[in-house]
Image (cartoon, rainbow, N blue to C red; front, side, top):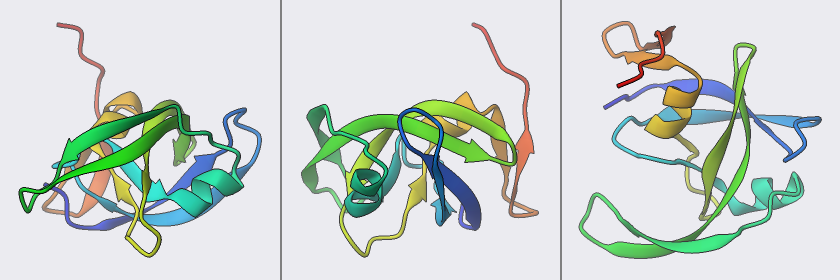
Amino acid sequence: MGTFRQTIEIGDPQGRRYERVEALVDTGASYTTLPASLLRKLGVEPYEDVEFHVADGRRVVRSIGQTWIRIEGRRVMTIVVFGDEGASPLLGAYSLEGLRLDVDPTNRRLVRTPGLLM
């Protein structure tokens, strides 16, 4: 599980306008979670409500949508969770896979990784 912060850019659904945020790299989380107000500001629309299991054992229902994430020039369209206001943005495992990035926990950084087809 990652425990460091990374600057990421969240794009509008068309990939034309981006906002920078500091996100906690969290490979224990499947999806990237961002404040709902940021996603709405960028025009990201929720398309489904999903029940999630959280680390403390609770189950919560959150909206999900789809938009662009860009890190160091790489970008990917990915599923994002509309998070609570004030909660820290999380960069999840699916977004990292899509960007072909992996976590180097020792040096607290992201590193490029080859894509895998199984």
